Length: 464
Image (cartoon, rainbow, N blue to C red):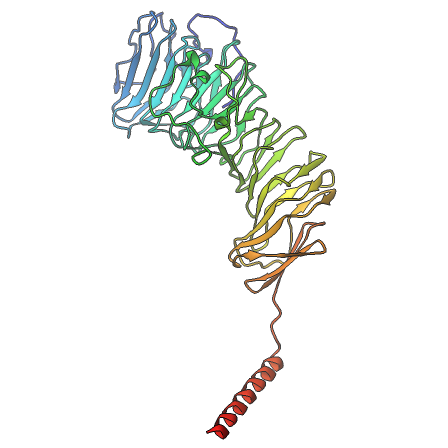
């Protein structure tokens, strides 16, 4: 969720200039909603007046599928909240204008905005002016809009986005937390799965699991709805990259301590996140992430810069054809990581240390065969130098299950009719079909078996 350049702090109602190009009129003080297209299905109706006094809350309901060019919510006082939702949960609200932003809120009302129980669609992206507010994406909400969800903040206020249900950051939307000087915080409800496109952001941006702390929200007010603290047994699953694009995230996944955000949360629960890299693109981390869950690279490349880190993640799952790129580092260690590398017919999960990275082995390595090998040689990792030994090397998948045996730096074993050999110093895995006896050998073995059978019958006949 790309954050645009900060706006100077002001307590005046904020209406982006881009809204005027969409045909949205600037509302007078106390007006809250206007759009150029018919939104008669909204209740309350458009242009409903909200008292500027603090504490006045309002709810809008979409009763049928609706298409709008853009919506502007304007607030003039603090302490308010509003809810925007579908009446039954099946309504689709489609944004159709050709420029962004298509949706905006007053940046300064210091309240909570709730979206839920509907589908939000469109192809132009959504710009949410939500600085100094809590934005709650509730259970029952589905984002199917393409384009970029952008969060724009005032100069002195960070953004707080709370993903309360599953998949509210839908598969065709990029999550951009970045470019603003004051940062954004994405809080994700425990035991939920969030799927988003490219993850971008600055060093001021944070992604955490909900830890039960109210201090991370504006005014320390816990949002209504289902709030579930993440645990190690019920972590957040954060899936990123399914738009196949490249992105760089400089922030921190697993904690937040930004001075311009609502609070600080470096608890263990905040780090209970399992990260899954989707798509063919490259996701780069340049910050020191502290999430403690697993790291799965199911496709494409996850790159760590020289300062980038996923040090608290002790389980790596790298699918066949996917890559963990640590070549920007002078050294990288696997001593505390249980690593699984997928092996396909001709491809494999790969750790790229190139010629610049010294790689220290350790802990366990699992080779997960997802196809019968048609190739005979697989390069599992590159490095300028390799030290140490894996604590164990095992095989799972289509070739069966078992352990290889270490001897003089080489792990070997036979599984599913293939002789496997892994040379630790080079990262080379060979897989060759086990030797099959020649026909003459089969004939000799058969002759010996028949002769033995005849002799046994003769001995039995003599005894009788």
